Image 1 (cartoon, one colour):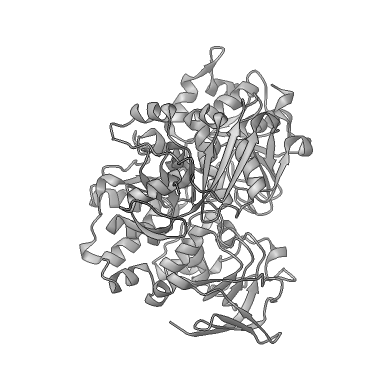
Image 2 (cartoon, rainbow over the protein chains, first blue to last red):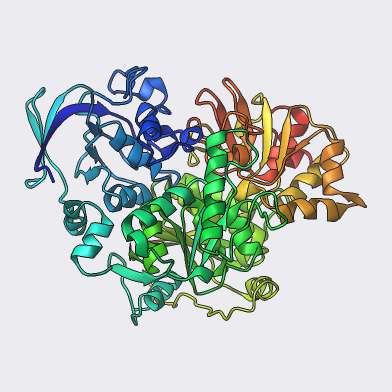
Length: 185
Length: 431
């Protein structure tokens, strides 16, 4: 597991539900066929109304037209990120698009479990709201061991909540690796 | 300190005497349910992780309902159903309900109830957020993703954090213009879309226990709209009768202790609640129908696990009877059983199906259909610029199709009244 993750921020509002992360019409692609699964990257966050995509200004697509990967790899969300359906295609789509970490004020339970147990993206939550402090395109660095987020663009630093009990699952890669390492399966 | 019904069921499923909220525990799962959208990836992960030796922990406990993208020409969606079919054949799955056969049931959450898989005191996981619906039967039920489901498929176990409980007590007679949908929209407006995150919503009170199972399921179904882990209603004689008619399985009835601890308790006098809607674009964006009356509509939709049960169509038919709809109105029975009931149940000697047909409604085949948008040829799907009123469960941007559409959520009474006028209409004008 990488200890330091650097990249550009893509900032979203509160209550980003799974239909905005990956609209239901796209749930038909294979999640294993390499030629087909890249569509999940292409359409990641395509359901977000344009005004709310890439805050504070909006109007920025997460993945540029015709591309399969995003130039942003750290997502900054607000409250209740990933609410709505149980589709694991949602954190998967973000991973396929190149996202490594989400930093949000809070998460919906199923999205959070899927992100961790499937090993798709690392979901940090925060003691304070950050989606009104960080701007889309800001250059960020996340220190996983120290639970710190540094914004090189604004030169500010924020504390993240520790991952706690789920850190061993993230370090193992997913819940199956974790279970094997602990002789559970 | 006493325990809540949710804590008692989780204690039993984890082999403990007691559990407390916040504890992470491993549960033995009684039933795992999956469908055509999340089943194929779940099977893929299960095969990848368990390899050649991949074994289903207990075939009798796996239930597979194709229901989401059924009546579509989309080749990839049809491929997903084929993957389920091949899997059921390869592993000889007894509880597979194939499309195109008499066994086809329709929407999984309603089919689980109808087929006798909802058993008081048990633990049910499903690869769908509305799996919380089954909690109406005094059981623990919740949604999980494909990875967690694959883990259950191979082991019969999963970890879960014991939720705190919120209690909602509804007392008083339900006025003839309200349904369970209005009550849950009231709750969602009060606690918002994350007020239930990692929590259990327990419904109680004389209004709730006067309801039949269809209406109770509307309450627990939308617990996920508050982010809740589960919704739950203690089993009573109504539940027992429903269950005994469908299964011989033994069950255990749990109830919350008088001194159980709740994070909050909400009390409602049902007679003071008005017909409600959730305005675009969130299920917690509550308003009275009165305040939005007159809003022009392009489409009305009655269907889904939330609002496509027999009681929902019975309520809608009371209003639509003898009238004509002014905007395209879609009737989508949740299950094939409900679809048959539409032909058998009557008002003044006219079948519900006939009432809807006479009024000019479009009656579709049982499936999840446009509740979640679906492939572009899905019946009832919302197009750009549409304004829809629907008995379904979610109205986040794009949920029913185009992200340039607007969706109002409401009861079958309100949707039916609005269908007759073409604008959002208070059902008290017709009742």
